[in-house]
Amino acid sequence: MKFGYTIIYVSNVLDTVTFYESAFGLKRKFIHESNLYAEMETGETVLAFASNESAEMNGVAILPNHSSSLPAGWEVCFVTQEVEKAYNRAMEKGCIPVSKPLQKPWGQIVSYVRDLNGCLIEIASPVS
Image 1 (cartoon, one colour):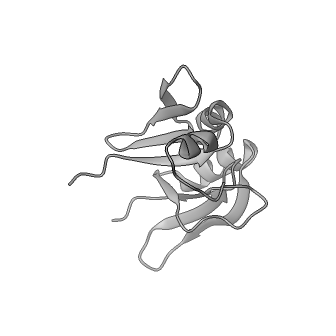
Image 2: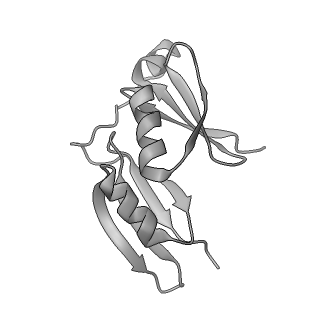
Image 3: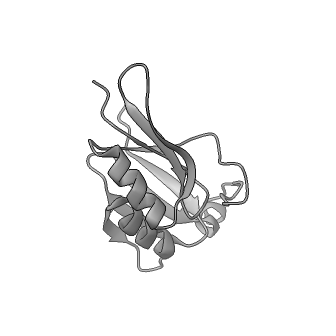
């Protein structure tokens, strides 16, 4: 078994792709002509976005992500040596603050933000 990809269901795929490019410096890898699905360049494991409607088209019932609701019980983590710089960029580009960068007892620096869809994003240094 190999972990292939994570799909986050969102209200607007194109807006989300643009937001992740701006806030986190990711690059788009693929956008389907329907604009209902997109993938970002994230290394071996793909981060993808699909429209809430596409979940329904696949027969999947979901509770849509929304910035006014509590975040769902999962997160996406971006790893960088420059956590504070990445956190500040995310904040400047419209992320919702959750937790500023803090040094953890095990040496890692960890921060949390929420994206335009209310999804929880961790920005952290590598684990040594």
